[in-house]
Length: 356
Image (cartoon, rainbow, N blue to C red; front, top):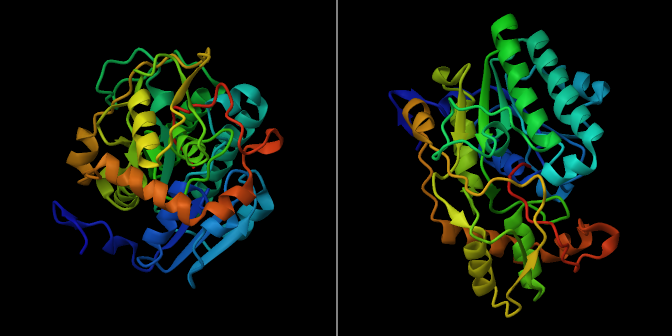
């Protein structure tokens, strides 16, 4: 049964709609596809499969998958011929270390790609454009906890953080100048079924992968650093609410759990859950990683959207581990760690931010 927040049925509002999801093969995107496909008329998915896999997208009669990049205007024109009503822009050049290594690619995908999508959305007159922003990007390293939407920092330390901020600024421009009904959803450390581990991926799937191989888990810093880990289903719920609720237009929302977990505690939980005797190892501190603690305030999303993240962390962690066990052969075949070997544990790999 759909949740009614102040009399508005956000799920029923998808009936008869055509939804366009960029980055739909990623963890958040694929789970959004599964959740939204029974609600709407048609789901259009665009993904270049650089950091995801085709098998992650559910095969459903009303889901059309297009393999391609958000910079490919031929693919964008093809998709917009179907005149999507609602756009969820989740595709990104992810994430911090990747952007440090490849800043021009980051700017093209996260900057130019987002600009083009907003241009197409304006030209076709979409009902809603939901932009996947980043909690680690907007608030910088000196924001007071809990992190609230009205705090913005200009002291950013990676190209990824800069271009995620750029996307929000473009969203403000298109909303004010062209009346594009924009919503900015700020993600925090997503985890759960659907995310393939790899060189530039998140800490939880990577820790789980290495633990299942009996390898020590690398920790940068002291291990007392905290992150706001948010189960993917809670993020999907927030996106579904942001995609139709009229109160969301022009707003930004934290989609987080509102709880802190230390990286060292996380490593210990994963090692225990996977029976990994290898323990942890200490890795070098990354120059760009200046955030000691992250914890979001989700009051605004709760009050305006009815967002209520309620997934127990350990329960979600076990679901992540179970998904990786079920898809182990596929994950191994994907070999997202590249030429260095899928069993190698890099010295500086712990990610602090989520994104499909």
